[in-house]
Image (cartoon, rainbow, N blue to C red; front, side, top):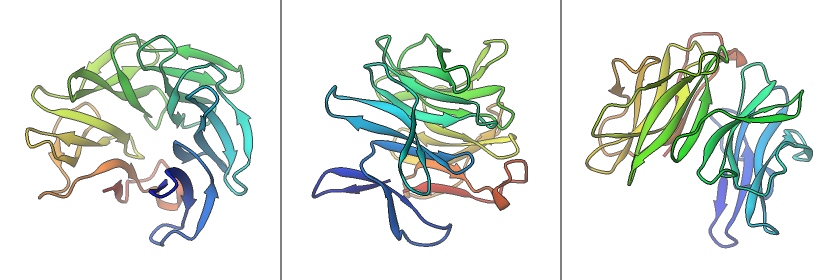
Length: 231
């Protein structure tokens, strides 16, 4: 996503891995994530109601294929399930931002969290768990692992730090995320999927945001190749 400081518009761009941006894909959008078979998921800003909605766009043409949410609320942070049948997204329709699941076949939307301010949901490769960031206090977030079958939750973040923007590795063994310590600098970290053996991936003062894994040959089941991060 590119931000034009002159027009204050956000545009979605597409480029081959390792190449510079070449062609705008969709204008405008407040946020976006690409997944699935030839589709791009995006939240389009609706100025008439001062909110945002989740829509599915054709990745080749940028045209809207389907509007997923229609509630007059702020719906953001969509994430495809591995099988492409569901979307996890964040909505403030009940007051505080919570994680909801949209079943694309049944056309239903179900809330799965009931805590405080929640953001950044990401699916496990098997589609049985979701990790999200839950606000604990001013400027402090903790990563929570949510089991979709049992509803059990496990906190993965220790005391004294703030973690956000989680992303599972393609094989499900690791989670890359952004950790902010006492110096208020966001840095790229990695841990096992159970929260153990957390360590920094990048040292020094290089800040990092919205990390994502590279998928070799487009196959999520293979060994993770590299981690990409906006910085």
